[in-house]
Image (cartoon, rainbow, N blue to C red; front, side):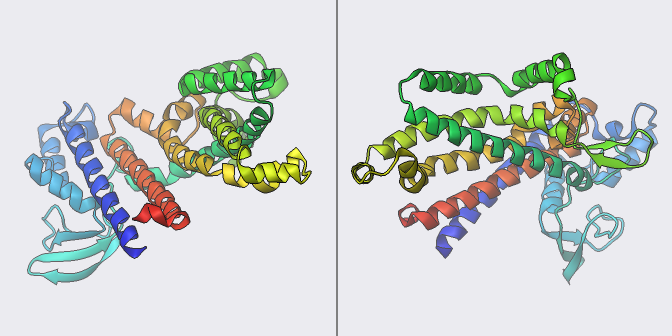
Length: 357
C-alpha cells in the first residue's frame, strides 16, 4: 500500500509540474508587457525598468521560469544578497530558513503565488483565500443537490422501468446533460430571479455575504446560494440519476435479490437493505469526479450570478489582464483536481486490492 501511495504522489508531482510549465509558457508568450500592466497608462521608462528589475521581467525566459518554479516550490533556494531577486524577505515569503550553502539559503516556505497586477500588490494567495471558500460552499451545495435528487430519481426510474415516469426522468436527464451550465444560469436567473421574483423572492445576482444597507457590516444571505447551486448541480444530477438507474437495475437482477424476493421482503426493504449499497459504487465514482470539476466549472455560473467565488475572480482577472491571479487560480484548481483524484484512487485501492496490482 505504501508503494502504491508513493506511486500516486509521484504521478501527481509530475502532472502538477507539467501544468505549471504549460501555464508559465502560455502566459509568457502572450503579447503585452507585465511591467506596463502593473503600472497602468501613466508609466515612465524609468518606472518600467525598476519594476522589471524588481520582478525579474528583464531576465531571459528560461531564468524567469526557474524563478517561478522556485517561488512555487515549498523547498526553495534564495540568494543571500538583498539585491538578489530571490532574496528571502519576510515581507515577500512566508517560511523559515533551514540552512545555508555558500551564498544560498535553503528555505522551507508556503508556495509563493506572487502579487496581483491590479490590486495594489495584494498577494495572490490572499485573493484566493478570500474567494475559494465561497466556491467550496457552492460546489458542496451543488453536489449535495445532485446526490439526493439524482439517487432518488434513479431509484424511481429503476422501479418503474419502461413506464411513462421512467421515460420522463430519462428525458429530463438527457436534457440536463445537454444544456451548458452558462445557458441554464441565464434561464434560471431570468425566470426565478426576475419573472417570478414576487413569488420566489430570489435575486438574479448576489453572493453569500452582502453589505448591510446602513454600513453596519456583512451578513450572510443564504437565499443567494439557491439558484447558482441548483444550476451547477443540474448536470451531475442528470449523470447520477442515469448511473443509479442502470446500476440498480443490474443489482436487482442478481441471485441474492431474487432470494430476498422469494423470502417475501417488500420492494422497499430489498432496495434499502440489499440493493442500494451495492448499486452506489459507480455513483460515488461519478460524484468524486464531478466535485473536482465543479471547482473549475463554476467560473461562468459564478460570473452570471455575481457569486464572489474563485470563478468570478478569474473572469475579472481576465478582463483586467491580471496574469498572476489567473495563473495562481489555475494552479490551485489543478492541485485540487490532483488531490481529489489521489484521494479517490486510494479509496479504490483500499476497497479493491486488485487495483493496486
